[in-house]
Length: 133
Image 1 (cartoon, rainbow, N blue to C red):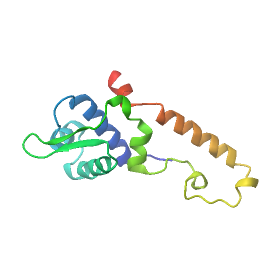
Image 2 (image 1 turned 180 degrees about the vertical axis):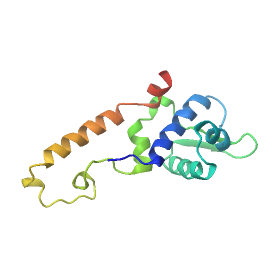
Image 3 (image 1 turned 90 degrees about the vertical axis):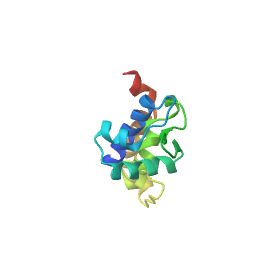
Image 4 (image 1 turned 60 degrees about the vertical axis):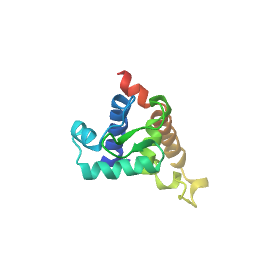
């Protein structure tokens, strides 16, 4: 499993908003500058995060984005899933994975265990954990 730039940047954007959007909305330009992400690519990532309901938006001169919830309310796992989709290490563990060999597969338990470790780790970290460090 590899996390793409969309997933990595989405996490950086959410951390940036957790730090900078306490009261005010933050512009795409400001996030792009701090995170060194092009405006165009950043807008794609923000659209995914917004569609997931993670952001509040405002238009106009003081417009931009801010978190819809407190930083403690977002796990790394949910942010990555919003941009990456399923984080399962193999297809047979995904919702779409229909493995006919599951019952007799000698490796299924291994992949399932790895999936559990990944889920526990990414779902056990919140944005608040990053802004404390």
